[in-house]
Length: 103
Image (cartoon, rainbow, N blue to C red; front, side, top):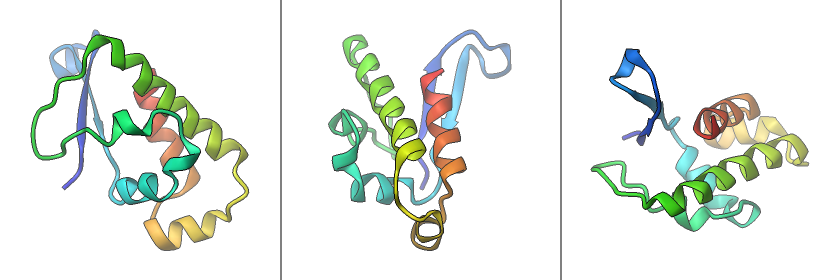
């Protein structure tokens, strides 16, 4: 099951929310590379099977986490074909997902 995150913003299309759907296997990817990202401990608390509450003071930490992943993708030395083979995730797909979360 995919994780769906609703971010409060102005958008008439989704009742003032922006829906960000987690790509399949991103959780496994994040866990395997968690030491490379800032604030992973806030992200893994998301529950894909229910609602969660994120205190306002922690929203910035999620944003920093997303930015750290985007920066990692831009500077990593890992062969993209290995990520695709193991997780079915390209650098573009990873970056696109986390860029949506930071905007």
